[in-house]
Length: 314
Image (cartoon, rainbow, N blue to C red; front, side, top):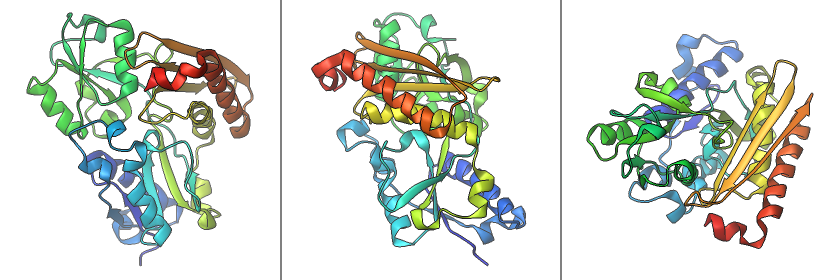
């Protein structure tokens, strides 16, 4: 008997990470995980972001291109739960929907992948770095203005094939995605998020449901509070900076063993020449105080940058 339907994008990464969430939900429901597809079947939903492969999302409408069709299905009742990569979600939630669960986070770092080189600094002048992320472009150009950044769209497998075909000399990908797909052997090195902040929410999954359905036992069982605290700080900065695919913004939060939250957030011009940064610590954070910290640092960056903020990031 179907207990609930789970909506997801159709890429291999999306279905892999959604399958992991599916099994967690079924176990939390007290059902046999071997019957996961029967109890909580996956519903594949094609999004506009998946269909657009010839240009940056900034040119087509932004992050909501990966979520709108799935959220519409959730509002209609075609599905009961949606699983998203958190970094693909805009800062503001859709009315009637809520992010109910943040499962334990995967590796938040960016990974450097290349056939020929071990790191970004090993690349020779004029080498081509493939990415569709304005943030990764700006951060790379900040330290390597002598390389060429080329637009590279597609799922993980497609990007790896383009790299192997010589379309570019290296690519930057989320380590979390490579780990989830058992492709971490491709990683040559990592970008230090304490030096170049990752995308807000990178490595985290968001389990979304209708707000009216949020009070359920399985939701409480799956939710990981330390992850929620960290991503609340990061998404607070995201909200303050009104960041989307149109802006080069990074935010990275971590909790120490003594329960101190450290947040690093930054914004960069598209060419990497201008960079605004803020860092702060917070003892014994809650979800609410972490978000407040993120909002504060984001607003401080906006205040420092002044009226030219959007112009710089556009």
